[in-house]
Image 1 (tube, helix red, strand yellow):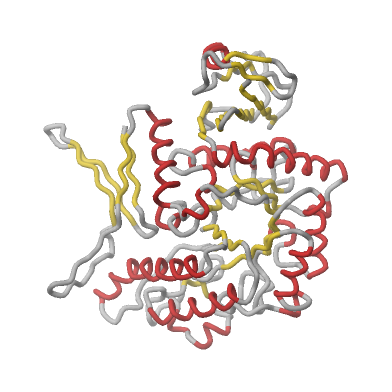
Image 2 (cartoon, one colour; image 1 turned 135 degrees about the horizontal axis):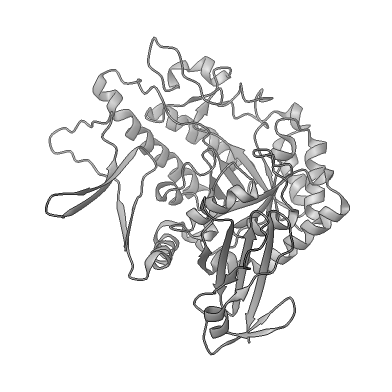
Length: 481
């Protein structure tokens, strides 16, 4: 079995062709639609690298080969084996409506339940009170924050939490000081009306002036503030390419944009190598090796519903290591789906990745906060197994499935997580057959001390017993004796 990936974050094309002689041709590369490149004599064009992975062990083998390659050769070495902190992000707790008092209340509650990183999302800069304005104006709104960003960061650090910050550097709002100074810096077709998405435009990173400006502004922000984590967002795609003086220049623009972006993020991540950068593009729109080369973590989707997350996280595991994937517990009813999912299930689904929380801890009951504290404490114990271990997919949560199951092995520990979507009646209980255990080894189940042989767990399996009800889950933790 083969897998092919492109180390590129721009427009691409992949295809498989079969001719009349049954010969098969597979190709992947820059999409030729609206793309050309001018080469002068003696010049050369460097195409994006394609990664071809082979395994004779099926999809599991392909996954392990790809994941190991990413960890060893793509992801920055400082982060490829560095456990990720458990975070709280204020976005779904406050959206744009926050002041310092609210942020610190949220941080206090986060510290009480054992969370390690506080992330301040959109709304901290310029005249940013909604998504209609201020992108590009990366100046701290001290009136809204009740003081300087530096003092807020100090207050967060004094509480024993790391500090993270949201950015969307590639975007620009028409209602912004930057646009009023440089309207020509937005990607556009001259003399045509703009096409908006999320009320914003895209900065033209094919323009070296734009790249140098962003280098300066972002370097200053990161140099003068003690920031531990950056969430780098990109909430719209690129349309209406037309900044070139000629048709050929416009056809070069999309690739020049990617080169400008890579130059920018390479500069920032090399100069600020201690910062953990997370890539976000409406969620997982840039879950690719091109960005993973610089940003060792990806926000897999802006949809935080636990049930929707099952196939998203499952799909990410085919090629990318678990340590690259952020996964959050959010409020109910879920803000995207309106679904009511038990807190236990939301926690177990998020524990399949890098655990985080995105809800208002100050509005939860004491019982809910105690549950979260237990989840955080458990995940700290299990974190090396999930983030550094080998993952095995046991049940695929596709559209025809009513369940999902994933296994992690690391050292002498094995974790199995099972989720049933909808309650069933007069149906045989699911039996999970574990993978890659020692047949002769003995494995103790943590919850009751029962001991199983590796052969029993792999060939007879583990029967899952759940009560009636929708969106229920179960986690099994084994330790080899």
